[in-house]
Image 1 (cartoon, rainbow, N blue to C red):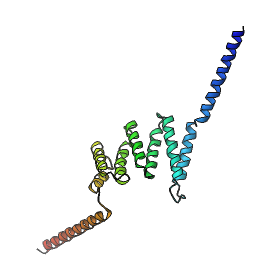
Image 2: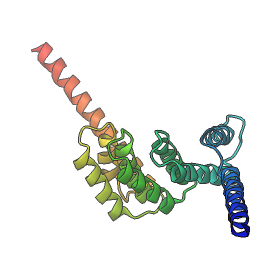
Image 3: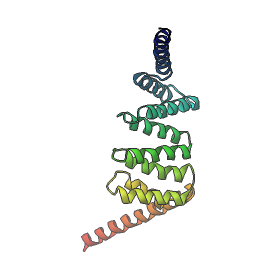
Image 4: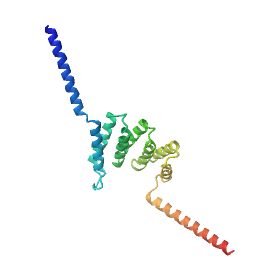
Length: 199
């Protein structure tokens, strides 16, 4: 009899503890909708036309929220969207290593999604412009061109490769030389046309 009472009480206590624990876990982990709402609100605030400078605290919070959403809901249709956002925030903060890590995660986990090629292009951009690793940038641009030859960014990747390591002054000189050569070619073509008309 005493055993039955104790066993029954223990069952009730165990059940009660499970209910409390479940409630605590639910309270600690924000719901999907609440997280989405917080991400959208923070993103709107961060990129609002009224903001005069880039707010690092908000950017860090946005990136953390996006990453937590991906951990909590890896199969959710919004997971790749938020992963891409987090990678872009890291890139805008000039945190090249973090951005590359997130873009790599996107390429690995969502290789069939339309933004996978853009992630690879951005990796080349980050190696070139943020980390200043020109050899690695060239390597990634080449991988991008080989893997996605029909992508809209292929032209940009080829142009970036052609200009790797060139200072702004060198680019301006090259541009001026090209402009002069084009002008001379046009003038020559016009002169030949006039000469033919006279003949």
